Length: 148
Image (cartoon, rainbow, N blue to C red; front, side, top):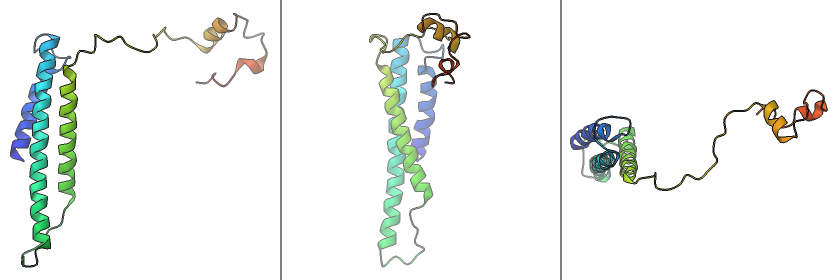
C-alpha cells in the first residue's frame, strides 16, 4: 500500500506535466508521451493497491475459517471494498491516460456545425417562409418546441 501511495503521488506529478493545459513539457507529441507514462504509473499504483487489499482479504478469510485460530476474528469491512474500488478507479484512470497518446486531430469530426444561437421567432420566420408571427394563427405560434 505504501508503494501504491508513492506511485500514485509520482503519477500525479507526471500527469501535471503531460496535460495539454500546462506550458511545461514541450510539444503536443512529448506531452502525449508524458501522459502515457503517467498512465502506466497509475496502472502500477492500482495494481499495487489491489494486491495489498487482496492479500489482506486473503489473510482475514483464512483466519476466519480456521477452526484452530483462537484470537479475535475479523470480517471483510468497508475499508477493503473502498480499497478495491479505489484501485479499480486508478487502473481505469491509467488506461484513459494511456489512450491519450493517440492523435485525434487526424480524424475528421463527425457531427453538426454550430451556427450560433437563434431565438424561436427568428428561426420560425426563417423556416416558415418569413410570415409575420403576430398576424398568424395564435395556435401555430406556440407549438411543442416553443419552450425548449
